[in-house]
Each structure stands twice: as C-alpha cells, then as structure tokens.
Length: 243
Length: 375
Ligand SMILES: Nc1ncnc2c1ncn2[C@@H]1O[C@H](COP(=O)(O)OP(=O)(O)OP(=O)(O)O)[C@@H](O)[C@H]1O
Ligand SMILES: [Mg+2]
Image (cartoon, rainbow over all chains, first blue to last red; front, side, top):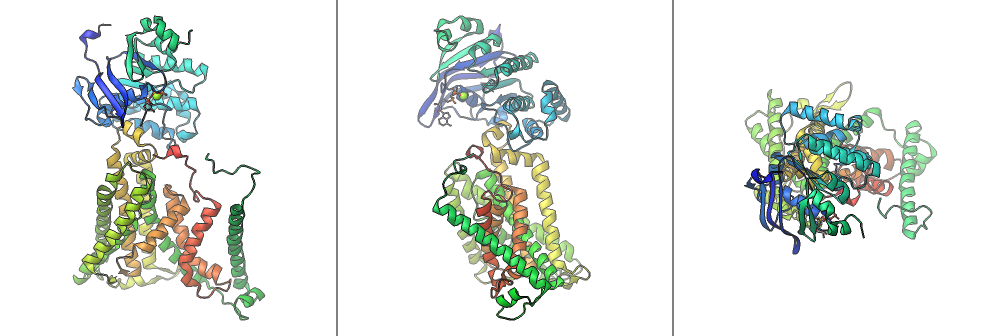
C-alpha cells in the first residue's frame, strides 16, 4: 500500500464527540483511502457506531475535523456527504419498514438524477440479490432478517457510493449467511468501492480487510495492517476469544 | 407487541367488565335502532314504533329524504376527511396532534369570505364567469391556508423540535387561541356572510336528486384527495415524506432534507384544510372566528377513527363520520323514540369515536405501532 502518496477520501483529525456531557470519541484519527477495505473493531459501547455517524454528519463532533476529499465538512449536512459518495448500511439495517422494498431502493438513489445510471444499478442489485427482485412490492418490515440485510445493502449501493460504511453487517445472520455476506462485501469491494466495516466478528473481518483499528472506550488503541492485528496477542485475547 | 396485549385467560378486572358492558350496550343500541328503523320502514304502525312514539305510528323515511341525508353526509364527511388529512400527516411526521389545524381550515373559510365578497361587489360572483371565479377563490384560500400552516410550523413548532411531544401539543392549543383572536381583532367577533350562491348552484339535479353545491363539494374534495394520494404514494417528495415519518435519521442518510420535508407536510395538510374551508363557506355561507373548532375536533375524531397517521384511514374516517352524523339521528335515534334527534348529531360523532376506540383502539385502519417505529 502506498497510501502516503494519495489523499484519503475520508479522514478524522483529532475528533472528539460528546453526547451531552458524556465524552464518547477521544482524539480519534482515522483515514480511509480510495478502494480500501478497512475495519473498526471494539467492544460494546466503545463508540464504533458513533464513529460512523460522526463521519456522516448524523452526529456533530465537539472538536476536531471531519475531512472529505481534503475538504473540512464539519458544518456540512449529511446530504452533502452522501452526494459526494459516502453512505452507510446502518446498524440493525433500519429499513423503512412501512415502505415497499422497491421504494426503499428508490430512496437510496434519492439524490441522484441520472436515470440510466439508476436503472443500471437496480439491475446490478437484482443480479446480486435475485431474492430482492422477487419481493419488490412487499413491505420491507415483513422481510426476514437476511432479506432485510440484502435490501439494506442494495439501498446503500443505490447511492452509487465511493465509500460504503457498514455497521455490523453480520449481526443477526445465521452462520452460513455470515460467510455469504462477507463474500458479497468482498464482491462490492472488488467493484472499486472502499469499505469501512464495523464488526464484532473480528476474525472474519480481518481476514478480508487491508487494515484495521481497535477502539476502546472511545480511544484508538491499535492501528495496524489486518495481518499484524490478527497476530497481535492482546487482540487475540480480547476479541478473538483466546485465553 | 406491547404489554397492553391481554394474556389469554388472564383474570378480567372490574374495568374490563365495564368496558365490555359499554361495548355490548352501544352495539346493542345500534342493532336495535337499525332493526326498529327497518321495521318502521316496512310498517310504520308496528308495536315497537307505537311503543317508542307514545302510542302513535312512526313516520316512514321517503327515498328522496334518505337520499338527501346520504348526500349531506357525504359532502360534510368529505370536508372532515380533507381536514383530517392534515392532522394525520403532521402526526405521522412529528408524532403530535396539531390542535391549531382547525384554525387553518377557518382561515381558508375566511379568505373565501373576503374573496367572494370582493368578487360579488364586482358583480362576478353571480355571473357567467362564476366557474373561473370560484376556482380562483379556491386557489387563493388554499394558498393562504398553506401559508398559515407553514408559518405556524416555522414559528411555533420548529423551535420545539426534539422536546417531549406534550410540549408542541400544548403549544398548538395556544396557537389555536392566538389565530382565533387575531381573526377577531382583524374582522370583529360577528359572523361573516358569503354572498348568495348563483341560482344554479342551489338547484337540485332532477333525476338523481343531488343538490349541485353538494355535488361540487364532493367532486372538489374527491379530486383533492386523489391528488394528495398521488402525491404521497407516487412522487419522490411523497416517498421522502413517508420515509421521514418513519425514521428521520435514516431519511437524512438517504440525503433527504428533513426540515424541508416537514414544511412540505404542513403545507400540504394546510392546503387540504384550506380547500375544506372554502367548500364549507359555499355550503353554509357563513364564517366566524370559532368556525374551526367543531369541524376541527370532528376531523380529529375522523383521523383517530381511521387510524391516526394513516391517510386512507383519515379520508374514510371523515366520510364515515359525516355519513353517520347525517344518518344516525333519523335511522337510529328516531326509531328508538329519542326526541329531537337531529340536535344530537355532535353526540353521534363522539359516541362513534368511543365505540371505535372500545372495539379497535388503533382505529379502523390503524396498524399497531411499536414505540421503536416512532421517531
Ligand atoms: N444518541 C445518544 N445519546 C446518548 N448517548 C448515546 C447516544 N448514542 C450512543 N450513546 C452512547 O455512546 C456510547 C457509544 O455508543 P456506540 O453506539 O457508538 O457504541 P458501539 O461501539 O457501536 O456499540 P455496539 O457494539 O453495542 O453497537 C454508548 O455508551 C451509548 O450508550
Ligand atoms: Mg454500534
């Protein structure tokens, strides 16, 4: 990786985020480069979801800079960042349950006006998830968890992102599906989309990622290549379940 | 599902028995009233009719009378439905009942009063160009009502975004008083009259026996509702609106401007109330600062009956409420021997509300919303 020569798509510079008086993210520095696959590990309540929300502007940091393509975007709304190619598959999928599957996908492309591109992307998603195509008129809330995951990924891809943030994509999936899910993520990555994944399943995530960070009570305690992290004894002990 | 769902076999409490009694009583009265009505249509001199009418025979309801009641019910109900949409939509996106919505309706009716009288002075109201003139009146009333709703959101409700839902609710009652009193200040407390309608509007269409003005009300309301339905279900903005109603955070993740969408919701709801206001003026020809109160409360009832947050339900709720209000006095109350049944129209509406809440608390078309579904 020759990251030193490229500009990151997304960057955190000394980010601090609070909820009220509670200090969540503490001096976090991150960078995601075009086409990378990176993952963020950490225990419950360590601030992983908060990191993603801060990147997207759904939460405003107290100090520090969120940088998008070299531009500080702290005071720019979420829509600005989505328009520039960042989007997210949120924790628990968060589909619009009372809307149909088709409408959920259309909303993913809310900011786009390129009719042909939208149509192409829809076709691509149908190819990737034939099951979704069969259920276009069904209310999203009535889908099974696995199907909801497909629609959530489809909805995010409809935004035609350059970076896809994924908050625990394998949560609640059967073990067999987890494997398929990771393969799909790899497939999306191979199309040139950078992936920033939050995962509890550290082994699986590190096996496909280039680099990773470990967050502990809002601080980045490890920042290394995936291989190095896989070998790290501390990490093995706390996240990979080895005594 | 919430804890409120009754566990099978759980012991009934005194309150449960009382509610069951109320249900049986209300449904029983409706059934007896209907049967008595049918019986006295067949034979006005049957024993039950004599019993309830102090020993005398009851009178039959003729077909034209019956038809008249239905048309009256539909036209009133259409207006309730139009107003109810605004309650339902705002509840959908912000989760509170905007009690000042009845005042938006009143502002529409007032604008109609001003416009129609200006046109009347110019001799255009009762003239050959009545159709374009009434369309302009509807348009302007709608715009003024829309503006009222939008300003209301900006000034009164947006600063309260994120506070507990009881707070905008209480504020809306204050806004309601404010608008009523502002109108009294500007136009005085008395009732204001619309100019007489053109003669042809007061006529009755021969064969079908429908008054032209009521037909006009029903047609305009139906077109407005169809338009709204298309807007909400088919357009991009409508989809954004439904997305915001469900999950504001994720809606913003789609790139939707949540504030703009909320303003749109108030605007569209206000437009519907404005249309209802001018229709009301044409039908009843008089408007007063408190005109918004009773129709507003009834439309709110219609929204609850239909399942608040559900637009089809609001329309259906309005129409059924209007029909019930028109039909029940003569089809249920009179056969039961109630004196002066037509004065009980308002009571009918609220009894219906209680009945629906007793039998299906989520409203006729309401889906049970788990609390996580609400923003
Ligand atoms: N909107 C909020 N208001 C107040 N506190 C919040 C809010 N959102 C999150 N928190 C708190 O911030 C902390 C970090 O939350 P976050 O969701 O980022 O954790 P996480 O690392 O994603 O955890 P998990 O693995 O359980 O998803 C938690 O203690 C949480 O309770
Ligand atoms: Mg999380």
